[in-house]
Image 1 (cartoon, rainbow, N blue to C red):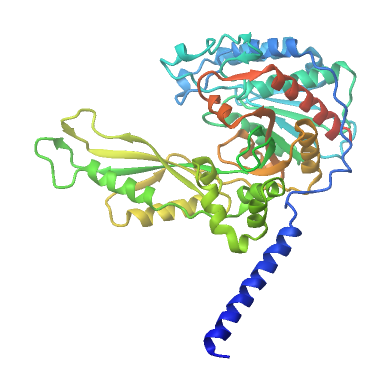
Image 2: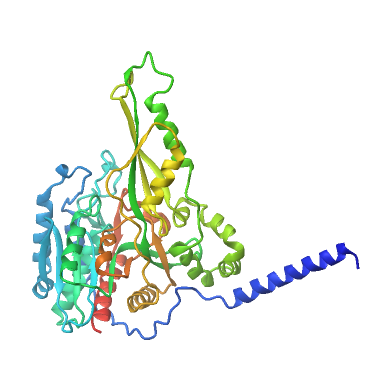
Length: 491
């Protein structure tokens, strides 16, 4: 037998061996987040007065608790009105819970459990909303702050983000208190007042709880939802975020001489800045098939096509393919690496004047595994010897720790989310930011999930035009929080 024949046989043998390994790994593949939840005895659902809950959510929307980038534009009186409304609307919840106000308008409620040896659970929902884009009001089906209940939904800014969570949580707690429920495990509710801009309230609440030695079993905040048409399965999937990206904004400043635009120097400050921004933007962080983003796909693979299952079971061979497929959309790509987004520019105040300095703002969402130090080092390397200054707008928020998918808290949330949605449950990475990122000192396991059911296209209304929550989702939310508290706080 010649060497060519031996080489061909060897190649065939290797291919068969690889094929066998792929086949075995595919056949025996199990989702990484698949845990036995049979030990979790879920509380039964109580009746929900959907019409009354929707009415209350509409009322809450009417309080214009809008957080502006400039705090001087906020209307503190709107938060005062919301607080008074919560107390008047949910008297039974306020009867059983101790209420504290920190940092001006952040709220901390404590429903003391009968067994103080048990770690408490912390439930979160913020009070503030983002502004409505000036000039877009006419595009809304119903005025953004009228809280109209129509066409099977509650309409208005904050109906989902995040007064939807705040109101349905209080609907559940008030109903439980009225029914005489007494928690064995302490329930703590944290409601920040400035989540959309500064997070001062949540930080103050976390500091308060830490000073008292609180170490929670888990924290649950807003974040992911039940996606009705998930791209991987084409069916509903309940996504519970186990981590969120860090947040940092970098300023790039190019000092310049200034002067009249009729006699510009060979290199203006704006030109230098443009080169620096392009250099930073083009030096993207590599995509990696790892972490919560990868765990999501692996968890959904058993519910998807054989091809996806085979790829997820054999990432040693197919990770480049998985990365390329996942990165076909900006949202998918964001799950796999630290993102770089130039967002703001400042130069001269007049078109015929050379600026004395030109500045750009670049927003980063830092993936678990990277740090703000990595971001700064990469930016400095990208600009090289360009005469620019790099600085943080404020101290960066590092990526959160990745929460457990084997803990009792995860089992409870996964069991309940699966039971309510009748869909597979998967961990995920939250690419936006929430107040819960400040709760690291009081909890190892921080999850982000709202039991809403939304199609992918529906998520565009969050922070956008025509934000609304369907009555079906109002009912789901109240029922979920009721069952969660009765399940987690009863043991």
